[in-house]
Image (tube, rainbow, N blue to C red; front, side):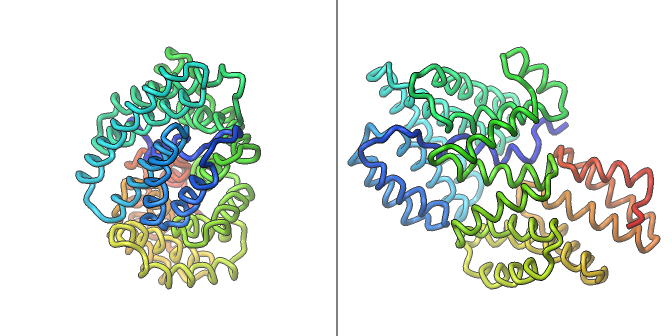
Length: 376
């Protein structure tokens, strides 16, 4: 049984990695240049800036963890999973040692505890990819406890609401084992409260707002459905970072979910042109996502033949451990077959969707339509 859902595959990577407190630090402007370059998919530029910043400002609380995450995304766009995880683990061990030293040297500076917890939490992404689920939860919890301690500081900022909100939201998903474990560790398993905290980070934090908006767009579009908020959050980050292909995908989905079909088509055409400029592994990952979006577009414009062609391309070529788009593609394929009175194929698609066990809303709809056909 897959204990961990698809959303966590995305969320754990970023668990507060780009939050920065409201406290001013020497080198903030330089570090921000590196962070902005990262979010705009300018990975080499980001790594170059952040590497220089680490040397120039070794006591800066955020630069080390941002540097490690930037390298992770660069490696992910270029290399196989084994190499990516190996490199990421080495860098996380390096920065965890640095943050441990900074916590000892500056015991009254709670920001170092925040980023020590962040580096510990990021290890969960490695264990998740290796399907070591208990290690995944333990690593996330270990980081969470350090982050909780950082809340005790007099200089507590809104940025800390992001990692705490993510953990509470994740623990509130339907898996009873995770809920029991969470309660035993003092974590409140509540999707509603978790979302509230993430919204605070999105609307009131200094730098964490970017990643909070990104996580919330996925939450609103795939899990706790809210089409208006899904569009607002995805549009905000997509327009802020127009070269971030992933943000563009979620923005296109938000447009379609809100009936803005003409705008969605324009965005999809733009994404088609951008796809060939992406790195090799990003092309493999994102092409099926884009195929789903075109399938959804043709479904909404009542061209079910074209929709099925794109959906089958998405399903047959899916190449990502983040299977939230795959779930949507299988659900939509089943709905189209139901419209065409092909109940056998519809049920088969719904069953494949349910097998993903990724806790998305698509699973709930698939279970509903498995028992009662979709009627449009």
